[in-house]
Each structure stands twice: as C-alpha cells, then as structure tokens.
Amino acid sequence: KQEVTQIPAALSVPEGENLVLNCSFTDSAIYNLQWFRQDPGKGLTSLLLIQSSQREQTSGRLNASLDKSSGRSTLYIAASQPGDSATYLCAVRPSNTGGFKTIFGAGTRLFVKA
Amino acid sequence: DTEVTQTPKHLVMGMTNKKSLKCEQHMGHRAMYWYKQKAKKPPELMFVYSYEKLSINESVPSRFSPECPNSSLLNLHLHALQPEDSALYLCASSQGQGPYNEQFFGPGTRLTVL
Image 1 (cartoon, rainbow over the protein chains, first blue to last red):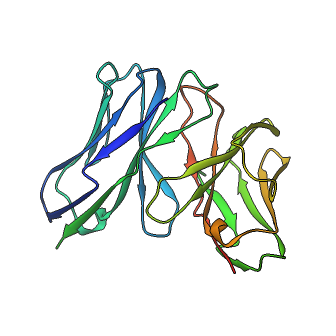
Image 2: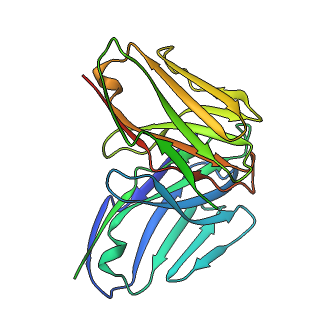
C-alpha cells in the first residue's frame, strides 16, 4: 500500500532563506508526483507536476526534483518570502490503481518570518 | 481558464436537512473528483467521475450521493449527515487519468453539521 510521508511537519524560517521540503513514498510505481500549496481554509493550488520519467521541474523560485527509484522528492524554495507561508502538500498518483487515485502526504506547514 | 468553482463557500445544516454542493469547471476536463478534508489532515478521496460515469467510490456512506449531470458539473447531495461529517469538501478536475493529468482544485465548501 502506497504511503506518502512529508518531513518536517512544520518549519519556521526567516525571510530570504532558501529551504527544502521533503516528500517520500513507499512504492515507486507512480505516474507522477504533484506539489500543492494550501492556505488555511482554502483549496489546493497546484505548484509543480513531475512525471515519473522526469527528474525535475522548475517554476519561478520553485524547483521540484524526483528520484523515483529511492522514493523521494524535494521542493526547493529560493529566497523565501512571508507570502510563501502556507501548507505544502505532495501527492503521488499510483500507476497500479487505475490512474485516478491520488495519495497525499500530511503536509509541511511553512512559516516565513518577516 | 484553469479555474474550478464551488458553491456555496460555507454551509451550515442540521442532521435532518437535505442540501447540495456544486462544482463547475470549463477546462474541458473529463475527470472530476470529490475530496473530504478534516482540519490539519490531507484530503481524502471520496468519488471520481470519468466521462460522466462514476469510476471510484471509496466506500463513502450513502448519506453522500454524487451526481454528474454533464461534463462540466459535479454535485454532491447531502442527507441525514452527522456532526463528524463537518469538514472542507474539495472538488477537483483533471483532463483524464494516468500520467499526464494535473489535478486542479476548487476553493472548497466549508460544511458544518449541527
């Protein structure tokens, strides 16, 4: 059974710092991995989608990497800003369950101090 | 337009009420999803519709009844709910299933059952 773990559960950093959020998954049979951002009480905003054949994706100050064989992904945020404060969720789409299911990690709550 | 809309934003209902949540997307996506999210937990998949047919029902109690009237609309009919059903209900859509399908989420409906 696929399990997704995110470490750390919470993180507080000063503004301007570069930071890395970690995501690990137990079964490498995935179609893709998606990183989301969620503000309190709001929906999820898609940040980056990495296909299983890809190693990384970049969007602005965000860079996500994927090592499928070791079951790991990282989300790198450069020059963090207070507006980056949110919960970051990673989610994998298993390739052995019909292609619709998505398994989420519990998230990392990020607080960027001004 | 990469927007998924949900109405209402907030809903308070008694245990004997009947209400409906609505979700709409105009991205031409053929897969639509309902998720339930409790506070500080990741979203949990409830239902998936593909080409307007129910593809996945994650053993959800029958007091939740999904409906997909057309390819752009997804409803969730609620009846005889329990206080523990209070949660954020999220709708999502994707172009299809499998590897190339990024999920886009709506802002959610905050449901409180008294």
